[in-house]
Image (cartoon, rainbow over all chains, first blue to last red; front, side, top):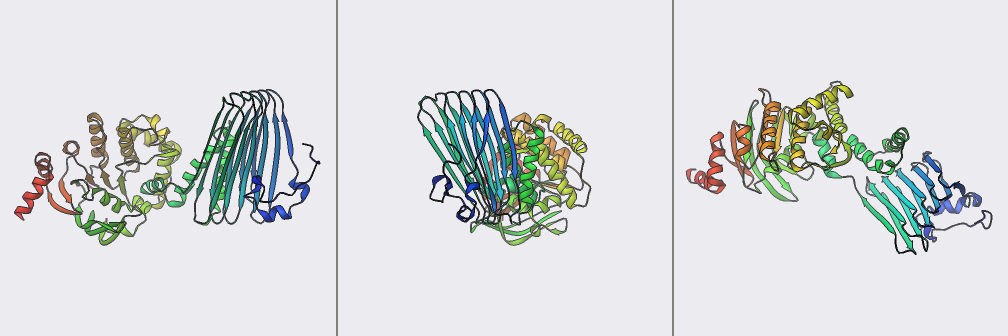
Length: 257
Length: 253
């Protein structure tokens, strides 16, 4: 779709924007709202994006919309942390050619009234493409973490293997998380796995740690570290992986719990 | 060393311990035996400060300090170790990281310097060797994928590393085969048998007591200690069963 075709101001009545911040959408610059970054991954090529969005809470927010086309046998990897601003949205629309792969690891982490969301649309357009998405959310205060993951398997895109997994930990009453997996499958020989769970910090593990002398704030940090680590397991670079976990944990440090 | 007086606890409003009194002196291993549902695990959790185990009455003094006033992690730093009947799995956290954080948190609370990574690994290797647990196991996630016996041995490795003054061991022998039982029992002896240490050993069976020879044995039934004696009391229980021994005691009383 050509970018300037039509500028549209979404509302929370649009499925993909249902958990978005309505004030932000209403006030945002129309061109910004409609801007898509475009990445073309050539056949056989690998492109990786590692990004953190950590502006402070006084920032009204940001939207990053990304449209990717991955050629046959190519690979696109995105790893992202949403940790700041009032409203943050990373939206990824990826189209996979034959045998291509999409890897996504995302973490939303925040308190106060922050609203942070990942919205993905994964289009398995041709056979043998694979995708794997892992999103972890950690929230406190009145904050909200959302993951809307839509997977489309085109007619004839046999042997598609698509997986998505979302888990959220709410550290305080008042925080919330929304998960919306959506599968649209027009081929019969495909694997699509999805799972979502929203819960609290594992009390048994926290007590076990306390019984060994680990104070509550440290136990919480260790458990959150293990939890968000899932999102970066596939990040094949130890330094980046550790940096991402550290950045996410820093957000937690500021939490008054 | 540990003095429990008239302890009452409730879980969800239900009374479990109903006036339990018990004293363990330094240098002693005190075994607690008793039928299922008597309150043995509740006693260990009440001592460990587990949330939900509410103490409604009574006192616990540990080395002259009011134990019940301390948070669970403060009790550990004060030298109390709780061996879990069902050790907890912590996915994503390695044993090495878990124990190093635990030891250094305890040391920091006691005003001692933290151990370096190298010092810690040396200590961990020594204690793992004592319990014949492969050091590779300690690099894995806490208790994840461990067999029942491995979890219990890992508990004892933790105890060795943390080197507590007093251990409350809740059915540490359950789930162990005969060889593992001996290894764990000898581990308890080597870590905790000292003039300035004490152990409260909760068990169902004599077989652990054959290795870790108790100085005192108490029977816990219906939330109270109904009988305390020497090691021979455990042997009588093994032969005659709880009902017979308790009936005989009641008749004598």
